[in-house]
Length: 187
Image 1 (cartoon, rainbow, N blue to C red):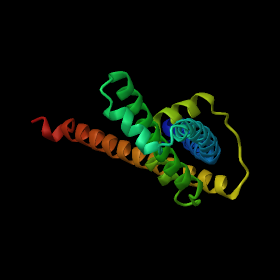
Image 2 (cartoon, one colour):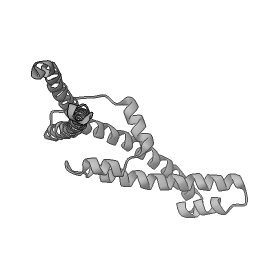
Image 3 (cartoon, rainbow, N blue to C red):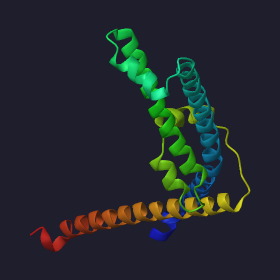
């Protein structure tokens, strides 16, 4: 009798299991597409940073100064306006270096370490911009198939752990209720 009552739940659980696996596969299969769009956006930021630093370098050269000398003059000036400009130039140089390092690391990433390099080199502002403009796709590459399989396995594994935990808790609860409600213990 119990089996008949629980059959609809088992059928729904099976559908839920498969739906989660599909969602996990599709979600992780999007990573190569997202990675590509993030890398393009990162490249745009890098190009802009290079353009800004080139302008400062050309200005410094017009005064027969190196860029470092030009920045140093600004930073050591008694005028706070010039000091703030020196700070801006210094920050631009640091930003350029960070963007170049991130871009190089991500561009050279392999199939197996891309996700980790992505996490290590993540720029929150560029990430948010990429998310806001992200266009999903279904890339039909070996890489996307591997990520889809990983998504399926990860989602299925998490679901099985959660399901197993709930079953154990439910079993403990029903077992403790049946022991406390048994006629021999009510004395």
